Image (cartoon, rainbow, N blue to C red; front, side, top):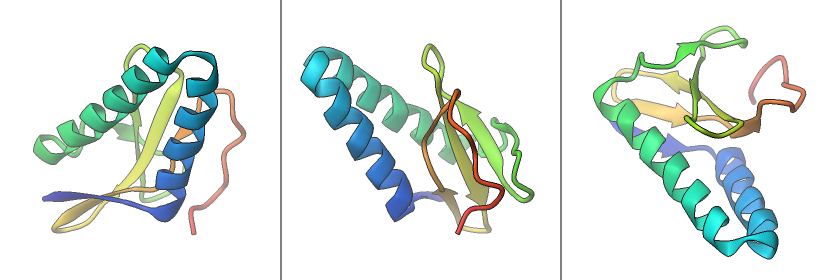
Length: 95
């Protein structure tokens, strides 16, 4: 099993880290590491996340943050679809 990041998820991660790094570089680095570590945990336990709001997905809540990783599981990979802040309005589907 391997982790694949969609281009949208990579953009989400980059944008949030850049935004936060202007205010607090240490917090930006810590958030980036926390998200990467949480995604890696999915390799050993892909069903750890709750059932997703979008059919066919699951959601990993990143501990001690307001962020959620929606993802899909296939036979040989886990695809991180986006990174959402908990207060953000969600799409009804992922492209």
